[in-house]
Length: 81
Image (cartoon, rainbow, N blue to C red):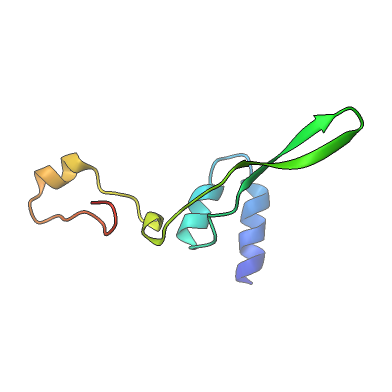
């Protein structure tokens, strides 16, 4: 059922900018490369446009430095030091 809900969310919200945040929240693979197409005449070739490199600590966002300065007991999320 969870996979059906995720797929429905992927299809319904595809152009609304939620996909990246859903993948982070569900801790799915973010390291898939971005592909493009090199088109020449009647043929095309699949090319890698960008390699992505997300570490495990990047599933949580860093706390803004201004907030850490306001509250002395607040510490930065692990990995964002």
